[in-house]
Image 1 (cartoon, rainbow, N blue to C red):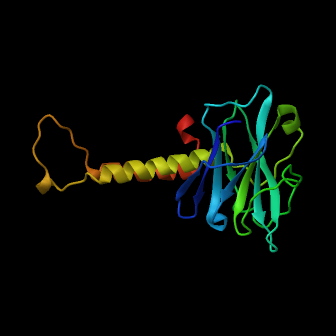
Image 2 (image 1 turned 180 degrees about the vertical axis):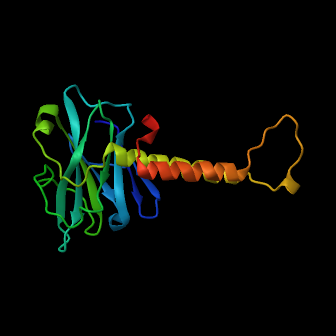
Image 3 (image 1 turned 120 degrees about the vertical axis):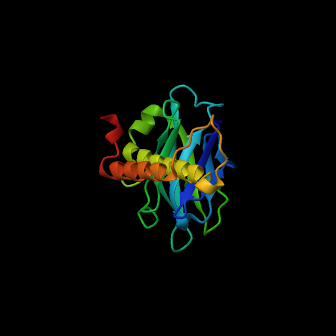
Length: 203
């Protein structure tokens, strides 16, 4: 058994970490995904404590209930020892058609209104023959931009929380101070350049 987890984030940018897997076969695991209609992305990741067996990896599936409450499975992509995490966009998959999947004949405990993430441990050769749904993958540029935006917001909010007026400042000759408007100017300039070219920092 591999040590597999996932987390998801919604339109409100709340993060939900899910670690409780339902093992439905020796090499297959299912995670419930509540409130799936408000979730945009899921991240599937391994902790590294229990790797896949040599020559094996994990096919990642997403299942949502159709109008009759029956599961519709779609292949999102893969995780391996060499690529132990992956981000998938599921917001556009909740009305798509199903694809071939290995979970059909299994006795999976499910709630009709809850979606699921399925992990099937398979050979790398077998995985190479499979084609994930085209609009589930998030490009490295997209994920980098999201990460950078979150980092910018976190730094600016953190720095701003210490802002004081000149009247409130306590003289401290050994300390250096940066005006808050300088941090704001850097924040706005970085955002502008990131929007123009997410890879501008490479030049």
